[in-house]
Image 1 (tube, rainbow, N blue to C red):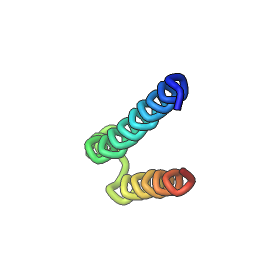
Image 2: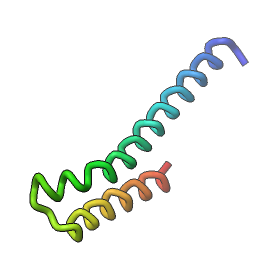
Image 3: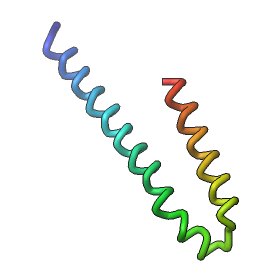
Length: 66
């Protein structure tokens, strides 16, 4: 393995790890923001639950594609 290909692999690993960390933060963030959505936009808890479900299903499908 040359040093160029090793550097490329480390950069790719860093990029993928960063993307996974951002996705995790986004997922956790929705649970924190849910009460604010209810009070600011007048959503019902059911509507917020549907939004969270849609996001989690889309997130799961994106993981299957990877």
